Length: 452
Image 1 (cartoon, rainbow, N blue to C red):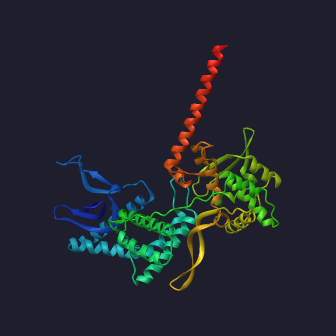
Image 2: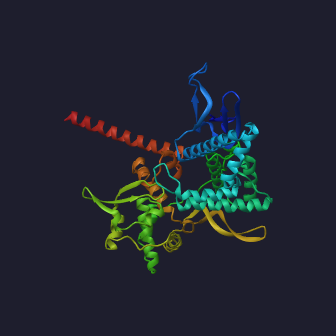
Image 3: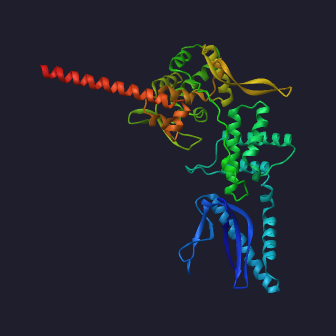
């Protein structure tokens, strides 16, 4: 009877998976399965007897820690079952069993069941497969599917990389994702007027794609982990509390702008993403312990958030008989808030990025352009969450702000609102100054009491 085991071999962290077929002393052959795996995801088994008993061997199986490992384990088990079946049939016919025979069987089985898998090694083909997979991806919190924005990001990558391939007059495979390829892609994108910020995002996404392919067992470059994305300056545009008051007190003739203004104000006082903000209804308002609370589940993270209803938000709801403003789309919200901020004269010269028509290679197109503009031109729906986080930083404990905005680490939160180490040092100095003043006041009070 034949015995089949799997071996992970290779000098790098990315190991090729071999199938070993043995039957008595006469047959002991190994051939590549076509799958590979990261060393950290392979569970090496220990020898159960002999001089090496208890020591790790090269045999093993994929770890069953995630869906990808389980899927690879199923693929290897299926391959082992089919090879065993063919071995029994071949021995009954008197067929010679050797390395060529095993290699032929593996190739036949893999080609028959995974012509599609081989095609997926084409980078654009795999990108499309990955895009179709994203809605069923299980996140760490157990929620299924990623946001529309995340899926759109990879659609953008697919479009830009397809243009790049067309310009290069070649097609690239997953194994071609190297720092050199990224450098070529970067040069092409800059030549076509794309910003460093956009290029950095595409670079991160293509590296994410390569890592996913590696976990799926596809051959990728050993240089994948050395890819780094260009770091671009980001501009933290917010509406200050004074500007929000100015917007609140502006009269708009158009009902659409009045409606959007209320959404904008609510957003800047609750700090939620637009995908969560514009879904709110009166059903999200609950009473807990005599206080009105806003209760929602964030669409992107799946986290449940409960916030006290601020006076400013309650005032807007009372104006609308307990209802939230009328539903509008993300696109209309973005259009309206630019217009209403213009009418409210939110025009402080502010550095940022806007989309403008430019000429690239003698063709007119739109690209993100960095410069100094009246602030109302830089207003987008994202300003709600960032304004909330920035305006209340230092007044509300940072962990409470993070629980509202959905940031998982303080470092990410501080980067998000643009706070540097110097800013934090100044805030600490202010805290110490206040603490020192309080201590002096208490000392003075004690002296006065002793004099009496």
